[in-house]
Amino acid sequence: ALPAPPAAAPQPGDVPADLDTLKAAVLTMQGAPGYAPRPRTTAVVYGAYTELEKAAAAAANATPAEIVACAAYVTKTLPPIKEALARNGQYKTGTKPELLCKVIEAAARGAPAPCDMCGRGKAKMIAPGVFKCGGFYDERMGGYKSCPASWSGATLKRFQWIDTPLGFGGKANPASVPLPPFFTQAAADAFAASHSAPLPEVRAAAPAVDDDDVDEDMPPPPKKKAAKPAAKPRGRSKSPKTVPKPEPMDDDDDDDDEPAPP
Image 1: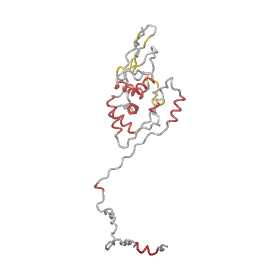
Image 2 (image 1 turned 120 degrees about the vertical axis):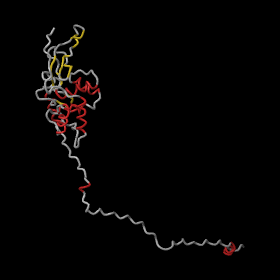
Image 3 (image 1 turned 30 degrees about the vertical axis):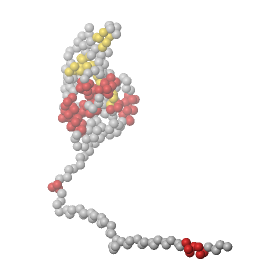
Image 4 (image 1 turned 180 degrees about the vertical axis):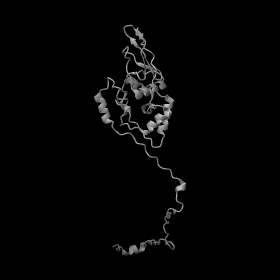
């Protein structure tokens, strides 16, 4: 049996933020004056955050990367969340809140790498900032085999989180986090080149008009004159002239014009 390493304790900054707190901070950020969502053509790059994302992170006692990840996944249904986890080599079983916590943590810090002790198990979060190997199925033994490996958030090896439809294309996590084997550096460079749109700037809210600031001495705007109705023709209307009917012709007159019979 493999010897069990000492229990790994979470380090400062490695503990993921509470999900409900993250959701509340994201909603507040999205309702702030001047907020604009990240364009779909913008790649998520570690360290490139807006001022509103930084303020939301400070309010939630989280990192800006967690705010960005929460905003990207909080409205998703279970199928795309599970697909993103499976694509990045993570467990996809659990309730929606559990999977949402898992996907936000991995997208913000990097996808946990396979176990470096048994080589086959996957890291599973058993407490905030504490991970344990989930073991694996041994085909030769015909059963499940456990592994005692455990890590803290600081000692856990990670890979860059990849989810290109949402902008995660290889630079979402610190530069010290390598790319996963299924995503090459050429693919990461090509994705970054095609998703180089700048982050949205905070739009200035329209100033509210204060009634006290309105100058009372200003003349009111001129009133528009109503259009006058068309003038009616003067005098009495003339009745149409009656044309006399032609009188019937007298048959006797017609007979006078005919020649007399022989």
